[in-house]
Each structure stands twice: as structure tokens, then as C-alpha cells.
Length: 331
Image (cartoon, rainbow, N blue to C red; front, side):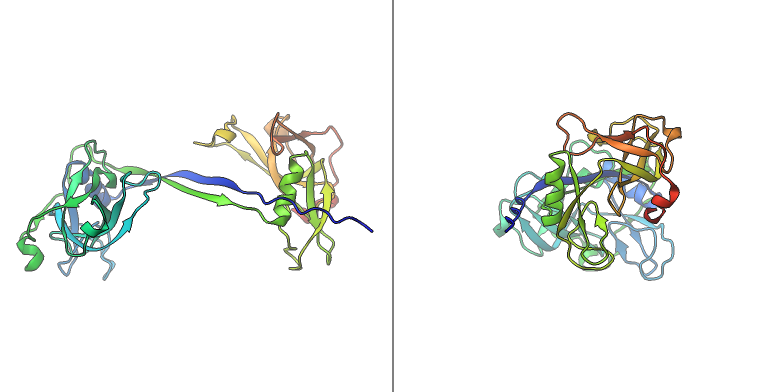
């Protein structure tokens, strides 16, 4: 009688996916953001006279290009709202606030931003609000620090003629903003399933394990708990490697930005490596060899950094290159 293998402990880890997204601005968006820097809110007027804030470059009804910029008010009316009792990192305010849609005086659409209010009882649809400008402005939506309650009455163009009191604007400013960088970030907690937990636990002992499909008998590394070909569950654990064969690779010529664990001088090589005994190639960095000498069929072995939880990179073993027929099915 064989003792049952103890189930691996449940693993959890915080993960962050983050990258800076850089985009250039057309004349309309450039004028809008530069205007915010100058405490001026610009909208764009469509062919039917409606005013869009934030402005867009093409009429949503006709798809025609629109450039007719107009200045709208810094006061407006809340159309709808939601209370945020627990602000998260990098949100506009550190204290509880309301997310609000505000129709600025002169605009026919609403701007999403935040309202600084003492509590949800102080917020209502239809309330009047005013822009609170940031002390330091750079040409971004954050130049509007927030909205705050205001006791002004709607101006004439809100209750009557929408265009009568709007002021045309050239959109021209000195030192216009022409591009923005938006940091995209996703924070979440990851909990691997049974198969990946076993894989991660084995890596702590500097072993690599996969799982074998009971139908096609292929071994998959890293395991996912099911065979991607047959669609059946896998639970037979198989140790593979540690050596393997480079199947394909690419030369990286752009240095990774804002990524501490990839502070590697370029050029370097990332490759798909078929570990001995595995039927699926995993990817890893190749080191210990000039980048222009890496090749398909190169035999490699893992190199572990002190305290590392996975191989830092793979280096050549010195063995003869593997025959193409031994890895062609893994390309």
C-alpha cells in the first residue's frame, strides 16, 4: 500500500503588471490638455451644435473631423455619482470622495472626475460644483485636482441656448503639450492551482516538474492541470531536465524599462527551451555565451542565483548540439 502524496500548500502572492503607455496627441487633445494647464477648459462643437467635453477629434454621429474648439465653464452640474469610502493608491484624493459625472456649463456631455465632499450625504445629482485646480499643472487631466461644491446658479447657456454664450477658441497655446505618458498598472493577488503549486514548490528545491497526460502521454512544463491537446485532467507528476535544448530564440535589443529584475545589458537572448523529458518548451534567458553564437539545437543547463526561486538563466553545457529531429515537433 502506497502512502498518498500530501497536497501542496495553497500559495498566494501579490503580483503587479505595470508599464508606461506613451501616446502622441492630435491638435484637439493637445489643445484640451494644454488648456487645463492654463486653467482653461475646452470642448469641441459638432456640426449639430452639441459641445463635447472632453473633446474628441471626430464627430461621433457623422465621423467627420471636428476642430471647432470652444471654451466652457469651470462650474457645472453633477448628473450622477458614486461614493468611494476607501481610496486606493494613486487615486486623485487620499480621503473618501465621490466619483462624479459633471456636465460643465456649456457642454452637452459629462466629464468623469472626483468630488471632494465630507460624506455621501453631502452629494446629490443636480448639485452645483466647481473645478479646484492643482497647484502645479503639467498638461494632464490631473491638472483638475477635483471638483468641490459650489453655490452658483447655472448660466444662461445651460438652461437655454447652448451655444449663445460659448467663446470660440483657437486652441493655440505657448509650449503646447504634444504627448503624454500614462502609467498602466494592475495589482492583484495570484493563487496558483494544484498543478502550478506543485511546480513552484519543486522549484524551491531546484527541481523542475511537469505533469503527464494520461491519454497522449505528453509531459507539460509548466503544468496547467489539464492537457491542452486532449482536454483531460493531468495529475501524474514527472521530473524533467535539468538540461534542455534551445528550439527557437530571439535577440532582445531594447532594454526593459522600470523592471528591476530585468536590468540586463542589451543585446541578450530569450529562448524557448525544451527540457529533457518535456513535450512543451518553456522560455528563459540564455547567458554564458555571446548572443550571436546562440543557435537552435544548443544544449543548455540552468544557472541558479543565490536565493533565487527559479533559474536566473541557462548556459551552454558543452555537449554537441541536439539533432533537429529530436526537437522539431516542439517548434
